[in-house]
Image (cartoon, rainbow, N blue to C red; front, side, top):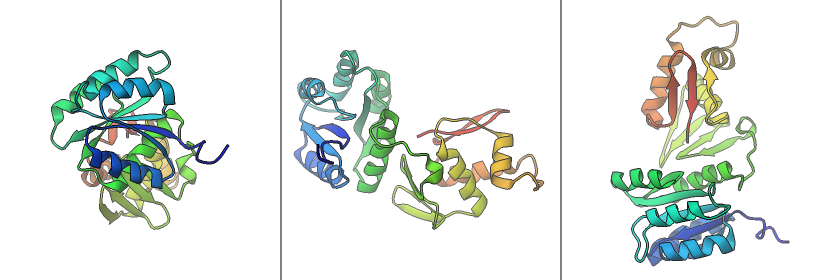
Length: 233
């Protein structure tokens, strides 16, 4: 069996040929095995044959749209938990809401930036087990959602914007992304980022979280009042 045979399998479905070519090219260049379809009906037929690790569906397609296809895929035996992401045009909030209601795990916004696409796909595949889920603590470069964190250079890339973070902000973000969806207690954060021997004010974490949200957006870091914080993709 070749390395290509072991590659994560992605089913990409869109009725626009240029989108299929562009996305397929970028995914295959990263080593993924890509299968393509052009409408929702094809997606349902193909998913049972190729058993993909990830399904990427355009929302607006002929014969059967992505929303309906997602709902039907979720009903198939063995595919209730397959990871599904939607391609949506920027500003189509209604599509995103309908997509999540239909059972989607995420959405990728058009126009598509290659770096954002790859990082989002890798994060989604980690959920499904399609990509090795190494502990992020040991990774030098972390791709998660629309973020790329370089732990050697202390840089953060958000979409196409690269920035340097103050050391404590960087350490706090690195801690949170090391275990997405884990709730880090405030005491855990103090010990990991500031250490036992450093005295800091009660609002120190909150201030650093606020500064991080200003840089990465409000959607990634969730507050559990009186308990702690967690990172979500």
